[in-house]
Image: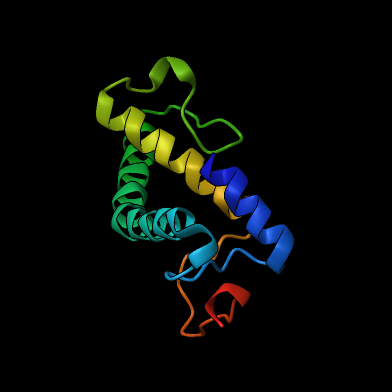
Length: 114
């Protein structure tokens, strides 16, 4: 639902730089802000976890797949790991849409605001 709204925004405006105040779809604006906050909070944590996991498995002589992940039989299924995996998938999906992870200082003018 939110991804579709973001895709619609991109089709109309040519980018994914949804401002924090966007009267036509304030729900989208809040969702975009929450994605930016999640990204900030979790990217360094996820990167450190991934690097630590890769180091541990390199020491054990296990090889990573071409995608840089462990073969499925070696991946943990803890809720925290599963949640992090879902976040990474969401971040990847947003990256493919050229999502703006940092809000710009610019404020767009929208017809509904004028």
